[in-house]
Image 1 (tube, rainbow, N blue to C red):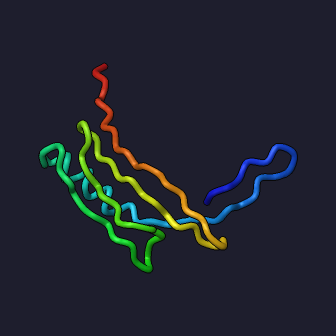
Image 2 (image 1 turned 90 degrees about the vertical axis):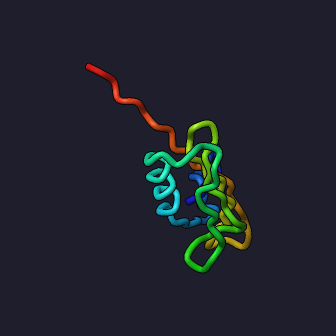
Length: 95
């Protein structure tokens, strides 16, 4: 859900958007299993089950899984929000 930022009144909802995280997590699993860097793992297309405004590529960039999303907001006359998902592997510390 997206909110505006008001100084003297409560923030107002600007709408919400939904997307499926499963294709992104599948790419993370493929990457962990040795799929090479600089590869496109999947292209997610807009459909009735998601809020995508355009195709979204899941790819490996500098060793990280990245997905750029442009989402149409729902429950609002018009509006979009852009965001980037990034999976950064955390190395386990040796104790």
